[in-house]
Length: 221
Image (tube, rainbow, N blue to C red; front, side, top):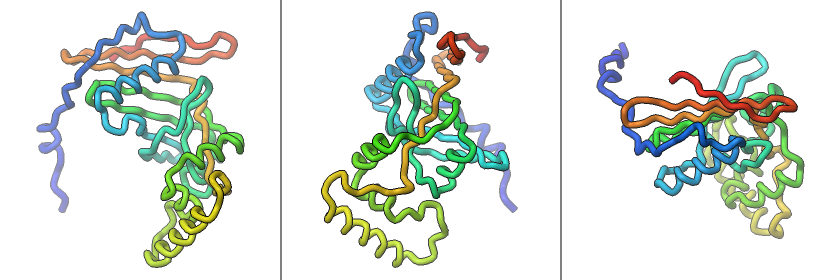
């Protein structure tokens, strides 16, 4: 019988953050500008893997999935993630084109939440992003067996070796994985959460409205 975790969990506490100041009244009109500022501050403060986030999706039956992945790019229109079209993540992004993202920088007591519709990137943008991947990541994308049952580790090693040979033989930029692509999460809503040392929290939500741009409101903690 598994032991109860309730007693163990009550002994744990929320980490005490550095809690940089956040004046919601002086926040920029564009949430992407604020996100870039917070991301750069997280990196400067030594937050490990500050570009790593949780990506939540749903399948055609409405069942949710979530996983930790990397932010590939962000611009004024979307937050970009990578996924093979044949993987569970890629299938969900393509078939039910909505997603949510969470960035959590515990050392600073900060979270950023993003929610919006999903669209695949154009071929040129996907190709440029693929070329920026490490050789190992491109090799794995060429094998394209992500999330499938692994019955034979020797086969996987051989397959990765073959793809690696392909990478070495081709000219830079010539190799691409047909199923690997970037997906853009077009933010319709973004929320910025800032904790402080006294246990107070500031929550600022941006909502995009057609024809009116971004509107902001403070939320109760």
